[in-house]
Length: 349
Image 1 (tube, one colour):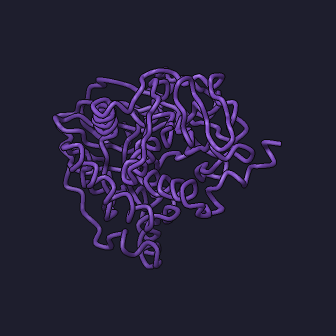
Image 2 (cartoon, rainbow, N blue to C red):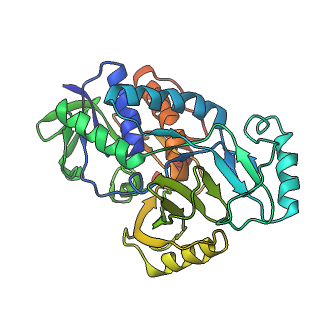
């Protein structure tokens, strides 16, 4: 018997696998690449909601766990994918600058908002005011991370690249059996794929489609993330990610002309230089109605659990909630009420 079957290898799945491996547990991962939210994610970690200048929920704790997590993963996988990258907020009006200074006086924001505003000297950027710098930010190259981790699991014979068939899962007394695999737990880290999961489809995971453009802009020359109504993330070689859109109705992974035009329009108000669109990608973010993750064991079958609903901040929050779920399953530690799926138990009945 192994300790755990993990279904899904996005950011949540990787974080939970790392908890299992650190504890010396035996596990296997099922990954069919049906979900794309982690691979198309911008990958930013940023402790401030820059639309309203408010702190990200539990930002201090999340960064304290996430930063060492990615540092250790880089050493383990002998790869570099955590890039320390400043985030600059473009101010559209003097009122926004004043709001920035007001926010910087608040205890939860003072260490993240730099009060020394930066004058823009880049003629390719359209900004009538200064830029505000957010500290302790960066970007995880999620595609590179997922590829490296998948290869690592292949070498250690811990991954099966096939669809997990729910109908084959047999729930036994305190364990599960899946085909020829006996395990103590199954943890579902499927992102929006949970909507097809008969054990957890009752959970209110809505899913929000997000689309990104990749542009080549040789004259832009920025080495930081620029945030306005869209964000611009440098990828190297004069290539930048532009994002993102939010669509609550379309649940496909197909890029749309509508999203492309929306991003182009917003980009036209941010930069004044020529660029070429070289790619467009789409994915479904696993978003929850109360904007908190979905973590915990099934109310009736404690041997199956879920780790989902990381939303737009999976890079930051994933390592923390994975640790909390592991301690819950292995050590019977209580989950924080705001992430525990018990808050939706009425929906299951």
